[in-house]
Each structure stands twice: as structure tokens, then as C-alpha cells.
Amino acid sequence: MRLLPMLALSVLTMGALPSSAYAQVQTPAPAAIAGAPKTTVQKITVHATALEGALEGDSADRDVFVVLPPSYAKNPKGRYPVVYALHGYSIGAQQWMGEIHVPQVIEGGMAQGAREMIYVFPDSKTVHNGSMYSSSATTGDFETFIARDLVSYIDSHFRTLPTRESRGLVGHSMGGYGATRIGMKHADVFGALYLMSPCCLSARGLFGVTPEAMKAYAAMKSPADSASLQWAQRGTLAAAAAWSPNPKNPPLYLDLPLTADGKTRDDVMAKWAANAPLSFVDQYIPNMRRYAAIAMDVGDKDGLKTDTETLHKVLETYGIANSFTLYEGDHTNRVAFRFQDQVVPFFSQHLAFGATK
Image 1 (cartoon, one colour):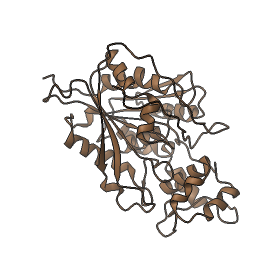
Image 2 (tube, rainbow, N blue to C red):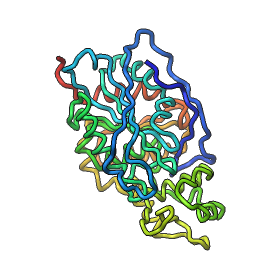
Image 3 (cartoon, helix red, strand yellow):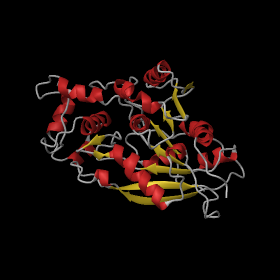
Image 4 (cartoon, rainbow, N blue to C red):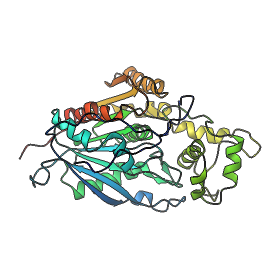
């Protein structure tokens, strides 16, 4: 079953960036496999208590797409592991499913031997184009939405195996950051991690924060005004809303890293640095040891490759087994292939499955 067409999109890679931002792209898909088992895609709405009252006004009711395995309807007693998949910046869940060609790649993975699982794609797009999957009074607590509200809803409305050993977490770009951040903090919820080209692993600098951008921000009357800003300028607002929120600073309810006269605010930069996983990974080493498996990959032409390999080496330093793959490609052009040929088999191998009924 195919629910969505391939969509053009843009991607945020806040952190280690190439010389120019990634443009909108259309991604190639693996060849469809004849006779692949067919899945069912459901679009649902999940109310997130953790997102209620967000100061920038994003809804606490989130679109979520659930991909059910071929036997789900035919086997009413069957229970399945769940893979939670997080999208990147400037796109939502539906657009990411188009980018990675879901459900074709899931069906292709099963045709190549992967076991049946439920896949969940939550939408975490915000008024500034991305939540950073962080905890903020301005954006809402997206970290808790993913790790608690969403997991609880899926477990109570679908036939899951409701244990951490049967839950996987994967994300690409900003979603890779989210999977890294949430994975480090919530090893009590998830049992295996796959990080695809994760952004923002190291401390973010002043990319996109220019005098021109500061003038544009000063002219804004509400968060919704960011729709008219340039890509990098919106990315700065997304970072600030997630990592330097300020409930006393309307109308955007955030602090920016430059003052009106162009001086760097070290206090804001320190907050941004504190949200970089390479800054706090050492605090969560016991959690990372709990995972059955950790994998990460990145393209050899992707500006995020150095930070991704650094995270791999940090875990190795602590004796934590994890795989790192540097594949031929850029930030998006091989993602659908990686999802089918690496991500789907990875979780099939490392999540816990119940007895067959």
C-alpha cells in the first residue's frame, strides 16, 4: 500500500553545516519488490498533555501516522514491537514519509526478511518549522510528548508489546537529534536506537544570526510572522524557542544570542551548548549501556559526518557497543534506501518479539 506521493522538502542541519543550506529535494526510492507484503496506514490525532499551554501557540493535538503490519487485522491476538520514527526540520511526518517512501520501504524490508512491526510517525513541526524534540515552555515539552504521551497512547490503542525491549527509536536530521536526546534520557522507555544523520550534536554557533536577521526578528508581532523569514532565520528561532525560552519576553517568548547592538549573549549561547548531546552524553552513559543495540549512519558528503563519528567514538571510549556507517551520499539522497535496507532489519534483529499465536 502506498499512501503518499514523493514530496519536495527542505531539511535543517543546525550544528555542523556545509557551506550552503540543503535545498528542497526529491529523493529516489529503492525498486519496489514484487510480492512484498502490504501494510495499512492509519492517520490519527494524539492529544499531548505535555504540549498544552505552549507559549508560541502550537496545538497540543498532533497528527500521527501508524503503519500496521500485514497480519495485524487477520491476527486479532497478535502483539507487535513498535518503532517510533522522528522527522527532520522544516517538514512534518507526512512529508518525511514521502521522502523515505513509506510504506514501500517498510514492505520492502519485510520482503527481504524483516519481521512484522508497527511503525509510528509523529508530527512535531511547529510555528518555526521544528520543535527540536526538546522541553520548553515556549514550544511545549516535545521530549515528554514522544517518550511518554505518545508511547502511552499507542500502547493503549494498538496491540503492542508494551515493554522497553520491544520499542525502537529512530530519527533523521533534527529527528536524529531527537532520537539521540530522547534516547539518552529515556532508556527506560526504548530498547534500541538508530540515529540517521543526526544534527545539532555539538554546540550550535551563530549560524543565521545576522544583523539583518535581528532586524527581522525585532519587527515580528507574533510567532506566526516567521513564515515570511528566510530558512536559516527560522532555524534560529526554532533553536531559541527550544533551548532559550523566556516566558517574560513576548511576543516570541525566547531569548536570542545577540543583543540589539550586536553583542553576543554568552548566557544564551551557554544554554544552546547545554542542549548539545556531545555536551551531555557523559551524564547518560549508564542509560546508553541499557540498549540492546545502537546504530548511527551519515553520508560521506554530509556536513554532519564529523559530529556523528565523534558520538560513535565517545560511546566506544566507554566500551558501549555501537555501529557507525559512513555511506556514499549526501544528507537526503540515500535515506529511503537506508531505511529499507538498514533501519528496518536493525529493529527486526534487536527488538524483542512475543511468542507467535
